[in-house]
Length: 146
Image (tube, rainbow, N blue to C red; front, side):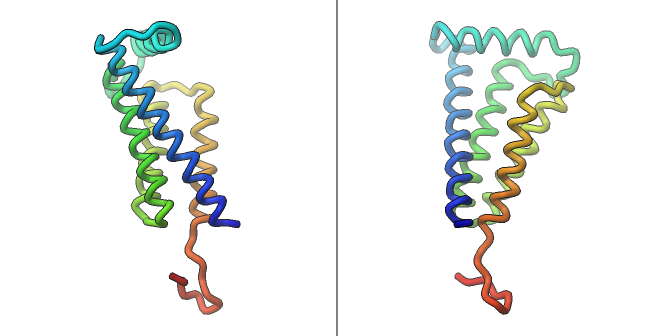
């Protein structure tokens, strides 16, 4: 049962990472003028540009393009981390941890806390649950079964 929970969490992390990558690439193309979509893409780009322009604090100095590039990086780290955890590799947890740190760094960079903090807290809880659920089974003497 624990392994199924770990697989489910990995699937959620993998898909959410792919969504981050896809949306950020769409927005990079929109911001760069490579293509022009109407509707939500236009609104999202305008909202992001407005948010970055109106922030009093932007420690890193994100532009809309670099911000979306950072979001793509975050998607890559959590997707690859999920793959690593599917194979129960330590580097998978390292990448998931890097994602969590990157996500928290956005709050610190803009010196703001918004409702997305709850998504981050949920992800932290899921990562902790993944650590517990994805441990290798042990024998009665403490040796790891392989």
